[in-house]
Length: 189
Ligand code: ZN
Image (cartoon, helix red, strand yellow):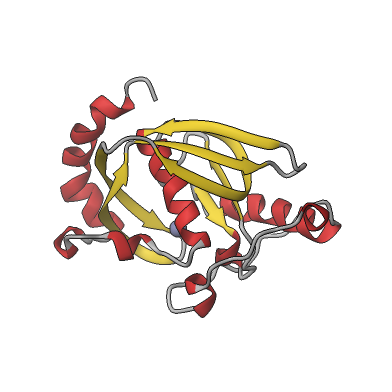
């Protein structure tokens, strides 16, 4: 496994729509290696997820994992999940405001409106179907990663640019209010 270079905002591949992965390609050593490397890169960077565009491969694969994350100490844990060709279905109209950051956007966070409940269908790394639902912060993480595969960054969804802040200023001035606003979401997610 290898830690890969993470594309930073301004790299054109972050703005590409990544292409679907076929069953044969998914089984190939190259794609299996890519998935292993994405997992290692995500863990090395303390990310909650990473999409293939971010390691400069425009294929529809993302990986997620939250395990007592240092970058996001308030996020509920997500077991290691590999999504191939994911499709997000928005369940209902309820939304919440999610403070997001991104490994491709250095030291910046901003408030993004996300759908509260989503259904995620995809293939796992072995080609088996995944069909699951997610709520709250976990739903936000799924939506953030799926956005990457369409060339969308969280910055595109920040509706009030006055919410933009560095990580240190987030912790100093915004984290407490954000955590209070999501307490109800954390219950049962
Ligand atoms: Zn990101």
